[in-house]
Structures are given as structure tokens and as C-alpha cells.
Image (tube, rainbow, N blue to C red; front, side, top):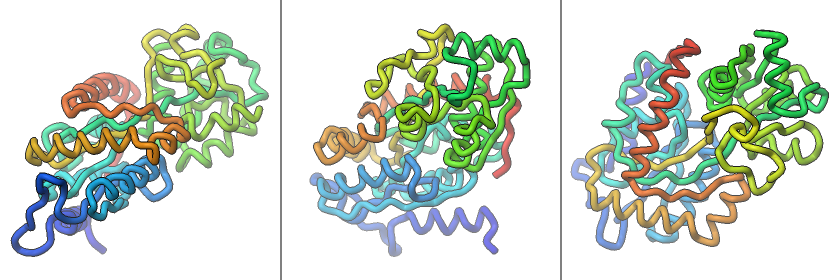
Length: 327
């Protein structure tokens, strides 16, 4: 069996240009050979789906094959480390979510630096989460839910798709900002969490809009609020948590594109320009909006600022919650 370091060495080699002498990676018209979009999770998840939508359009724009390479493991860390050590020629790109900002504070040994080892390209999209309770819950508003928590400290449970995920961190942040105490119940993914939540065996969930909103709209769950500062167009009746009385609550699942550090700035600028154009295309934008995405398409500098702000936001929350994970 391969150990972690051997696996990463082989993975990084597989992401580098073939042959002893790398071929020219980019010409004025775009890449001169195939491009890989590396994803740190299994096929079928939000990161993978978004990556495949982008890959198809970029392939059309560049006239080169753009493939999605799934490299799951250690909360996305295996993929991140492999990309960080790959050839900085623009032909290996990384699409990642909040783990780029949070994993540093949860894992003792990443094997890479999430800031120094990557060149920001663009913040692609953001998705809100929805705070929801089972239809059997006595709480019909955020205010009533907070009252339930305060009447039964530590007795109210919240489900998540796993330790360290955005669903988990939303619950931790809610406790901190609302001044309540709840008990975390992690599951191995969003689907099993919903299976326990919908029948009322767990008291609340802060789930991605794509997963939970269909249940809310169908009457299978009761939405209380959204976690972003803006209401969701598909469910405008749901207030934001700030509007519901929880100050400073602004959390979204986000997905961004990075390249290895030392990728030439001209190449990064070209990838940014084309990725932003792809986001606005008729074959891409409607698909992403159907997933509940807000199209962003930032500059590299704006993504760098976003990553820094996310790290500053989550570091104290993770420390206070005592979240520690092993690779």
C-alpha cells in the first residue's frame, strides 16, 4: 500500500507535463495541450459538478481538452498538496471550496501552504446555506429556536455532513453569535444527515441550498433563515439570519479556481479572463444558477482578499470549538 507521501509524489508527477522537457504550456491563443481541473472530492458533489460545467465550456473556448481529475482524501488536502507541487505552467488548475481557508486550522500537517503555494485565479460562485428545522419542531422562527436552545442548553442537536464541513462550522458560528449551546451530530455526507433530520431525529441543520430547499418547498422541512446577507431569490420569504436577529452572520459555500504558485502572471490573467467569460455564457450560467449559485467571477486580487477574510473569520471559531482532524 502506498503511504501518503509516496502517493502525493506520484500524484504531483502525474499532474506535471509529460516527458523530460515540458511542452510550451500556453500560447497567445490559449493552452497548447490538455488542461486538468483537479477536485479534492468524489464525483457527484457540488465542487465536482461545478468543475465539469466549467471544464466543458473552457474546452470549447480553448480548443483543448479540459478534464476534471478527482483526487479525494483528507478533506481535499491530498489534491491541494499535489497541485501545489505540480508544474506551474497553467495546465493544472485547482477548483476548491472553503476547505482552502479552514483546513489549515483543523489539520496539524497539511504539507502545503494554502496562501503561499497557490496563485489565485477567480472566485467562481457562492451558494447560501439554509437554517431549517423538521416540520415537527416547535420553533417557527429563529427567535423561537434560540429560545428552545436557551431553555435546554446542550440538549438541542444539529446535523452536519461531517466534522469540519461548512455545515458543521455554520452550527458552531450560530452557537457563538446567538449565545446558545447545541450538540453536534456529524454524518458521512449531506444525504445521511438529511435522512435523520427530516423525520425529526435531529433538531436543526444548516444545509446547502441545493440540498435542503427542495424539502422546504415541498413541505418536508421548515426553513427559518438563510445564512448569507441576501435573501435567496428561489425562497424570498426566508429572512437572512441577520434579519432574524443573529448579528454578523454571513456564511456561504464558495468555489474558487487556483493555480500553482509561480504560474506566470500573464497566464493567470488569461485564465481569469476566460473563466469569467465562461461563467457568463448561456451554456454555463443557467446551469449554475439552477444549483442555487450566485455567479461571482472575481479578479485574482479579489479572490486573495476573500481567502484571507475567510481564514480570519473561521480561525477563532475552529479554535474555540476545538476541531482537530488527522490526515
